[in-house]
Image (tube, rainbow, N blue to C red; front, side, top):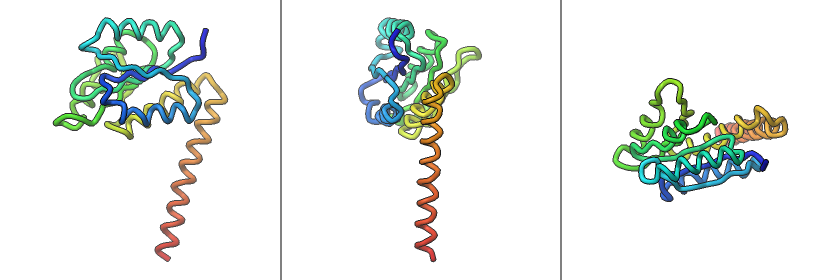
Length: 167
């Protein structure tokens, strides 16, 4: 069996600029991933086939991005019992609020972990996938903790620079 991976699914190629943050985080942790454009509404059979095949090949987490009221994450969650993370893309007249609601309002028993709208959510989706995989991978768990510590150090350095300016 191949090494576990994360599948990053986008409803449109226009989602890539947002989802690049996810890919960058996964690369930081050296997590294998596949990225694919597929639509829950325009290519439902292909989406179903990919999710089933990916799970059989070792996909452990699905990250699904969609804008407007499209709901790729919900469609994927209906196919698999692997964790699904939904990223609402900030587009359209409602700037992602419609995508947020369609992603977070899942029926009981078919969960989708939903992150923030837009690039912050895309970044957090990568971190959340890393944390999920780290449950069974001690080396990855250490890397996630180290990354969190580096983030805290960066905030402390910014505060020290602010304090120096104010002095």
